[in-house]
Image 1 (cartoon, rainbow over the protein chains, first blue to last red):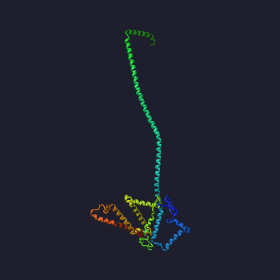
Image 2: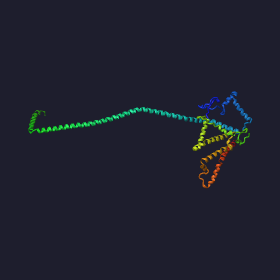
Image 3: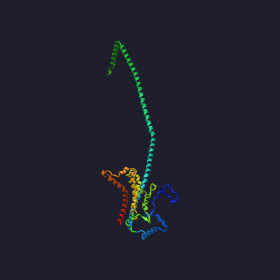
Image 4: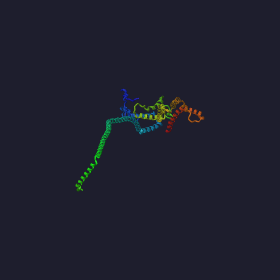
Length: 228
Length: 177
């Protein structure tokens, strides 16, 4: 049952949107009698009208013994005073408790909404971060590419060096062979020439050359004596 | 009128019109039906809170199937609570002091539990007639005793409530003089 309002059956009843609950309940005087009663009697009897009515009714009931004062009257008075005292003392606390129940209900729903919003916001931030990371990936890929290129270059150069060294070794070998061959030929020729010259020196020539050397030495020794 | 001590227990009549129905239905006026709003006024909130509390306390020990009894038990509890508490005020009539009303409540409910038990789990409900761990010679006597107690139960329930309330109200009257 939805409590909609329409001004005393004059307008159409609208079920949605539901009209909000009024902020305060109906005005009540002395906790029992609604204010509308006082307003109803005000034009005819003024301010004191309802009070006179109440007093008159009470005295009428008492005097005509329509209401008899018996032991239950005292009980009624005591119970009434206790009830009023209890309401005055704990009324606001009970009202605050009821309000707190409602507040908790609303707060729980609101917290669900707020947490959902927060979760979505964090998701958005993380998504933005991921996008930023993707942008940065370009640099990462470039650097990786450079790295790989460098490695390839280094490897190529190393292999080039190896090739060069190998080729040089082969060529050095060839050169060394040639050098060795020439050396051997030279040595062999020198030996042959020396052998032949040594063979060709006759003893006569030997004696003549030795004598000549001795004459030269004597001549030199004469000029060189002063230098000592 | 000179009120004797027992006048509060007479069924109320106004000009020959029995008011008993009114006095039974009056407590329902004090509990407004909760409407479909989510956030209600203070009275509805408090009432719903109280109902939730009572139903939770009643239904937590029960299994899921036992929750079928939640509605009738909770509403019965609230009704009896309100009727009995309102009877403490002066010039009020407590319907539960009448044996007729209490028997009308006790008999159907007791019969309902008995028949439900017999229909759904006949062996277990008949097995309740014999408490566990009785010595063998006592079994026939005990079965008869248990059957007698089972059959007396609605009378016991009804009379118990009536006697308690009547005695209570009477005692209050006696002490207050």
